[in-house]
Image (cartoon, rainbow, N blue to C red; front, side, top):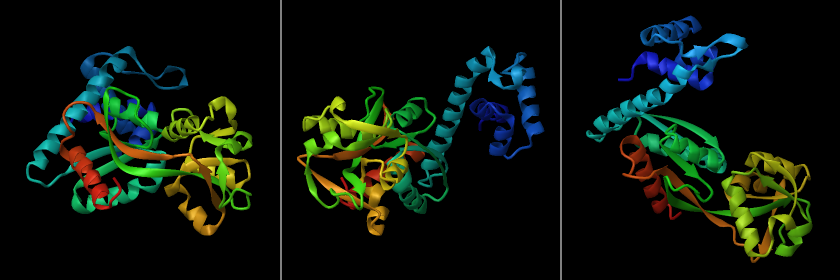
Length: 301
């Protein structure tokens, strides 16, 4: 249903690279260039500036892009709603997930969902919580599965399961398998996720409740992934807090250990995020219902 030239324009605008756009669209680069030229001829204005050795959107291209995105969204929604009337969902579903969910939970969720809805084509991106919420707000994805509290009024946040975060230390650390007082964390070299991470917000809020403010902590490094944190702990750079889901393999291999922190409550909710207003319909609605029912059946809510 979507105009093909506008589809090519959207992909080129996202990558600002004709070669990468051609790879995604399964076209040759000359074919992509031809489609863009035909669209520029149709509008009578250039949409991309190819000078200076790089590609940028012109003023006309910048104005056109949000309309092209809206037309795609309308086309996708129409397809989903029509196919869902026969209870046989088909078409595209764009998801986003913050990193722990994206790496450790989302693949299983999607695999189980596709067993029920095999005609749905799922795409997924990952990033920290703030990035995923921004992607939902900009309609680049239909649903986000996030780890931290959502701090936006334009999105609906719906918890679907509970998660426990734990203090991870090297296997040979004196704290491994022990319970420590929260105040002992003042002197520990602490590894943290980057700003914008939902995990970081959960940890900082929990530590504040036991009297440890940011200035009291000895943060030695910030990393932008859970795997990076765990590798840094294995290398002896410090200790960190991660989801229990993320450290299962290392605990089984005895390369890392867990320490209990007296009085520290690090439970959090994994949540679905979608725009305020009517509940998601079509494929997004089917996935939302699937996740809520799946977590309920598994006793995870």
